[in-house]
Length: 145
Length: 300
Image (cartoon, rainbow over all chains, first blue to last red):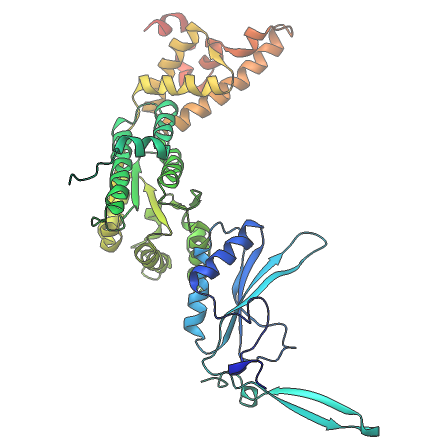
């Protein structure tokens, strides 16, 4: 049974929903800014769930008052990497928290081939499971073109 | 069927613009042409909004401005009020002002300028970007200057994101004119050129009194006469910066008053603490020649 038609990568917030529109993204960023979080934009073409640290697109944006500036950055990143995953992070720098408070995908490749499951037979009939993205077999930068 | 009418006055009152304009009138002395122009801009924006509600053509108005005038004529203060005004009228989402100079926009090596300019632009989004001494951005004597790059990025954002950002350029009149002549693209994107006139001596005295009132100080009657004389003489000297010079002069007068109070008696009442005497101002370098005959000079 296909539980995830289209093999969409589901990471971060809202990833089971249809893609957010720019107006919706603006509202989400506004929420982050109102909480005093620093927003940054990141991209990658390796969709593996354990790929935690994506590439930063520019510096994290501190002291912003309005989402328009971040949307400008998102659109630039989309233009540069139209077939990469792009996500928006909101970092909460309050002492004792110091971690991302929000993370959601704002751009994804047109075709997401999904993941293959490899079962490795170990000693004593133990089975090791590995997932590999079909896209990640190609070298970086050529994966979704 | 009669056309519905709209009470413009009611919309004007509702927007809270009048409060900002009143504050402008109360806090800024003189500057009549500037105030008139700002009132016109505010009126246009209100009318534009009503036109849009009635589905008449009302293109997004270009709000970028250029403030020209000598130092200390209140360009920054007016820009602050302008941000407030645009916010109240709904043409600026946050109403904050980001004040920058060339240093904040132009980088030091190749590839440094674009990110720097963009970062400033991002910070100013939703509000007003105030570029002080904007003519420094363009340095014709050095063709490899990175200022041109900053101007180009600025122009692009000024054109494409008119809803998100209002840019105000400020600087001396003659140098800004040269700047606009060499950057026609910049000039054509700026709708409002506002010139700030120099203050008259009377206006400067009023400004001084307003500043002192803010600090809970006052001038004695004789000090007032001396102060007027001081302004006349200070104007003739180099680096006269209108209201800023007045503020600095009063700051120094406060220092002298404090010293005088300590040296004289050591015992003071409230009135003495609040009053600047003629000798506090007379000790100034500007009035050095007048020191011997203060009484006569003060009477002129």
